[in-house]
Image 1 (cartoon, one colour):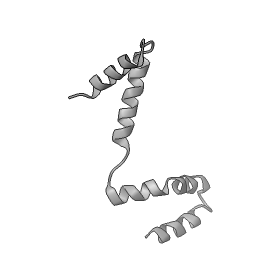
Image 2 (cartoon, helix red, strand yellow):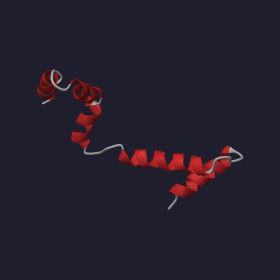
Image 3 (tube, helix red, strand yellow):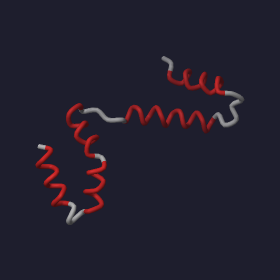
Image 4 (tube, one colour):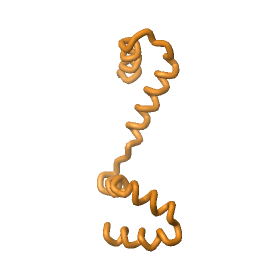
Length: 76
């Protein structure tokens, strides 16, 4: 299956070079999705939440305050 897809990508790169290049760059991740049916969406959400806390907490006096806020955010 991978060989057939790579052959198709080579053909498609003649007509859609930028799209084919993007697919080639992310080829392993695309294949892993179809094998495991998982994405990195959950991790991206966690990262965005931490970035939001960092923006809201600009001026935390030390790392411990930031750490406590992150742990409180993700505790049940």
